[in-house]
Image (cartoon, rainbow, N blue to C red):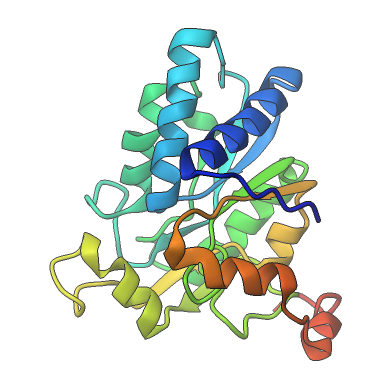
Length: 227
């Protein structure tokens, strides 16, 4: 693991964009794993600007997003489908048929989770997975205590995660309780992972991720059968 500490959020965003830019230009048909959240908005602004001004093309790129709220249709204003469309997909030349997000409004969320995992496997794994980190340390919606052997599945969101996301909804009660998320093992199967964290609110989570212990029981689960 390589840790880069940049002097400002802007510098961190530019360096992250540089890595994605280099990856896509070197391998146009790369498979990107994408993330959502407030941290990613200026990053997508930067990538969209490079598309407009510097010829960065995503035309041959395939993407898979980490997660989606259960119960939200793609056109819901708070869905991650809508987020990605407005923040990134509609601003670059990526082929919509190559963009993938879990189906939060699926009649059978577990079947949809399994189908999403299969899509990732059929794509030949993710080449570069972009990650943010929650204040409680989650990646995707893999809340604390998630198994390192977990694959794409339904996850119950903690109260702290729901409170952090409440600002996007009318009230805490309307903030979704469940999500479909790529599992930890799904994420770790990526060829490279790139985590971006900015701001004081994420400092403790980032420090614990870098310096904290890895529980032996969790490590043993890495090679357990898919749940």
